[in-house]
Image 1 (tube, rainbow, N blue to C red):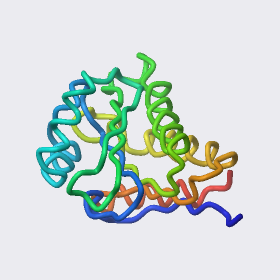
Image 2: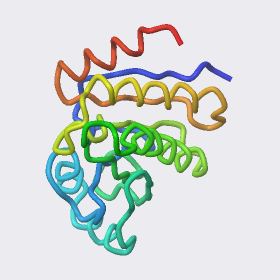
Image 3: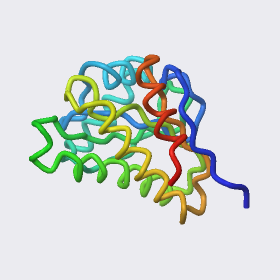
Image 4: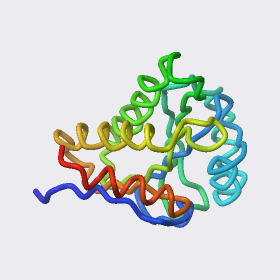
Length: 172
């Protein structure tokens, strides 16, 4: 079996042809700003209808729908924590988001997944701290993954890309 590939790319997550893209959603799953709004716009009205049937998602958990009009076959929606200084279980909840998404992907026998920088937009999670959690959780999970072979950190801008590249270059 080939070594899993974990990489960062400066790319529009809605354009990636992977098995699943992750949506940094709010608890309603009914669309919002940032990556959430972009994914809903690109996927079309079918995604909103599918999300309505899910009746929301608590922070730290994840739910999966079809990809609708996206190149990705699936969307895994996860609700990251709002940053409140790091004393309200934000790191644990963010780690749970990544684990839940990876678990859903593996459970569905997907081979590729792309993540945005969960909680780093409107939710205010500091990029560097979030990157450390994201890379740690993905690396740990990929040590035992069976079907999942490719993880992309889809970076919206150069600062995000640099943060992920720096963390991925660190020995683990």
